[in-house]
Length: 228
Image 1: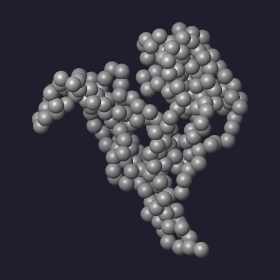
Image 2: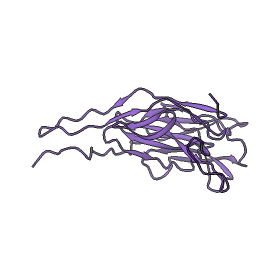
Image 3: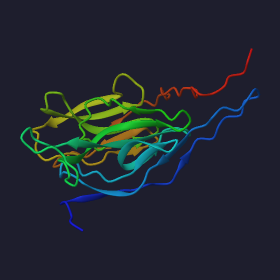
Image 4: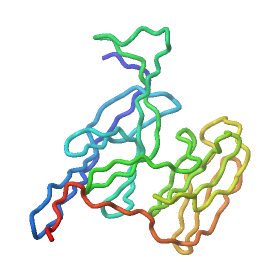
């Protein structure tokens, strides 16, 4: 078999099932959320995805990469892998028997609700798919972010569903060079503390004031409610 450069394996992980709630009037239809099927795909060096796919009621919704993280007992986050059209304007269009110009790249993080089957792309502040390595704890995401100008590297802690970052502190200037400018952040529970490891710099820690989760999980839109 001919190999197309680099390959990654999209693994199908253990299933995460949504069990229908019991209602006194009539049971509603539940949703089944699982992590998809294994496959090999070519990818770019900048993308480097390796993970699983998300299926809702047997339908593939998204390809993902890396490990998932349970935020609550019914919601989890996982990183999306994007299949990007890499064809130039002068390239021949994809034809039968000939592969097109497609590459896989890391994308945003997704919030998946096992009960409703909803898949939502999270808008994490200053998040850069090529640079940011997110470390999750509870509903907090810690990572090194890059400003819109691309000139500064920030230590960021975001909370799922919160409008503003819990923490945003400048670490150093960023010249857009090697993407591995910051290793994975480390969490400490008591006191709540996050430690960042910028490449070539001393580790820096920040104490956080614990707050309540701001994620509100909707009821299943397909549920039959109790008649009044």
